[in-house]
Amino acid sequence: MAAFPLAHVIESQQFDRDLLEVVFQTADQMKADLYGQRRFAKALEGRIMASLFYEPSTRTRFSFESAMLRLGGSVITTENAREFSSAAKGESLSDSTRIMNGYADVIVMRHNEAGSAARASEISCIPVINAGDGAGQHPTQALLDMYTIVDAFSGMSSLKIAMVGDLRYGRTVRSLSYLLTKYENVEIIFVSPPVCKMEGDIKAYLDKNNVPWREETDLARVAPEVDCIYMTRIQKERFHDPEDYLAAAGKYILTLDRVQTMKPGAIIMHPLPRVDEIPKEVDDDPRARYFQQALNGLYIRMALLYLLLKKD
Ligand code: CP
Image 1 (tube, rainbow, N blue to C red):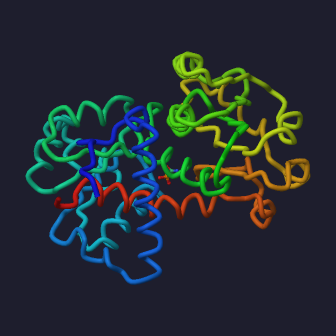
Image 2 (cartoon, helix red, strand yellow; image 1 turned 135 degrees about the vertical axis):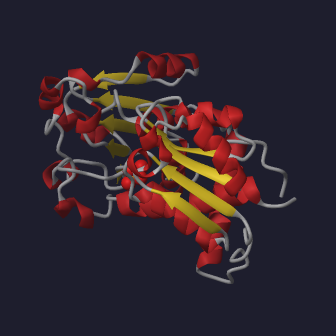
């Protein structure tokens, strides 16, 4: 296997189509191996991953930690680093990063500020993986999202995807938009309340890369037309004005009745956690892929850790 060209994983734009293929093929290998021969069970033996989470997480932190352990590596970790690390005493991110360089072989970092992972990577001699930086990006989520889409539509000659909900503060939809530009015949429909529309930088990037997009407010009109509905939570914690949150909350619910209007072969995705935007009764519909999507995060993160840390 060729050397992995990235020193850090900070943003989706780092991945071109060839690199995506490398990550997805490695994820396929990891998935097959987990339920098979376990040839990779000691692949990262002796290596240490530091998971440094300044914001809450279930999927990203646990899947990264599970991935490292399943590859034979070890994990040192802090959840709620804003309270339980020396950040609470005023230590800078730069100092914390420098210190972790001596203790670990890779840093997986979730932070509340956009650009934080990039700043850490500038002074880190070990790989930094962005596990979500405020309303910035969540590139490993985008990788597992794209892996899920490619798996669902093998061959994928075209894709019409609706991104629904909090598109303004949603780092997952931002990161996924970048990756979608790497594929042919993709069309994106942004469905959101007026207070959380997709930002202009993403729209400009899509224009530059000739990816057609449009904005809608009516999910009922869009649902029958798309191959994928990517629901997102309205993120109360990111709104500066409570009035804006109230204007956005509860506006888009993908009810089972609405799901029945979707194409039979379409899929429903969600980065999770969900609040009320996908009722539980949708979970049994064959189009619901969000739990498989979350599991795919394990294979993708095993692949990334392996590619970043394996000895040549
Ligand atoms: N999708 C995602 O990032 O989930 P967590 O916040 O639980 O990590």
